Length: 200
Image 1 (tube, rainbow, N blue to C red):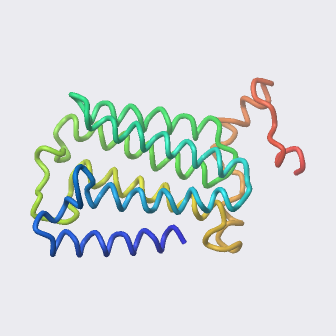
Image 2 (cartoon, rainbow, N blue to C red):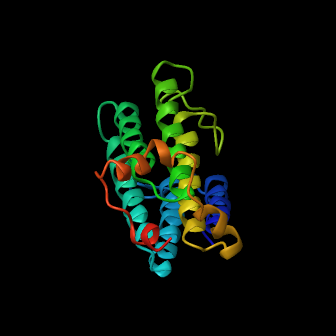
């Protein structure tokens, strides 16, 4: 469902960008990009709540927190640095404390977003100031990070089951990074096993 919401939100955002007098702005400080992202994040959060799965709800809360900090980053003097650090912190959390494969996928997406910030910082990727605004989606830091964020939201939705059980089941499998992350902490006795692990 979140993937469908993403496609619909993208189409509506494009139509607004193409037809409205100020295409990228809906009203006040609300842009089409923020609205589209909020739509996919909301869909993923609803899926997480409906799943009644503690891990899904926790990850939904983490992604909401990441979105809030990311939004705040654009009000600071160095938004790329702040946003890159924000994504790095959350990526590390998912890698160290992730339990299921889809959590590690989200961690990887956020890590890629942080890496993109580094590339933008050294001038290899256009930033928000040098972005070509003649394109709806341009090759630039804001666009790449937004798409990675949408992918993280969709991954949460799929992990929560909004794509059906056939999609959710393989995403439940414990990821190969676990021995380097949460499993190592469990073996050291620093982190307790989750209820699901105990049942398995």
